[in-house]
Length: 182
Image (cartoon, rainbow, N blue to C red; front, top):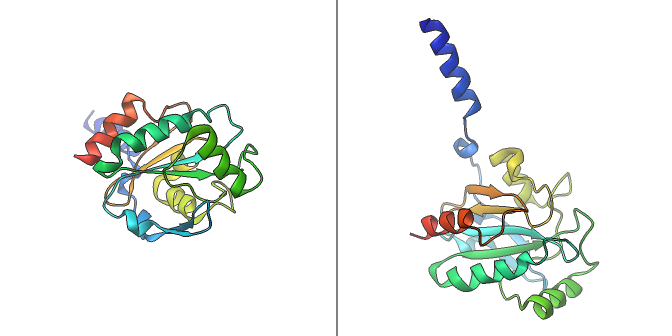
């Protein structure tokens, strides 16, 4: 009987092993990415702050989440939260160039949080941030669709990931952000 309990405990530990034990060789703040205007965003400038990374697309059914991303930015930026939008055509729903995306976001949604250039977020051509996320957090960090969210903690490691259906202002995300800010 004791042998079965040990085997059972071992199996449970295997299934509940979290990727939070990842061996981070780099942290999020060690990367750079180009802004929507072409300047380099040195993520080290965000060091010590939680970052909500969201891959976005102009023609997606979830595009209205831009409003909620802006709401988060307005509500929590003075407390240290960074909202980083990463426009992507990985799911074939983004405009063709950065200037069109920038204009769309500013005119339609009045966005003023940081946006990157159009960037691949999955596969072999994914930006190194997304390759890093997959290497350290597993498949749950790979966007399954537009408006997939990765929350980076103050240590520059992945705190959690959220599906496209999870609204940026959901209680689940708000509670996690507030716990990171305190």
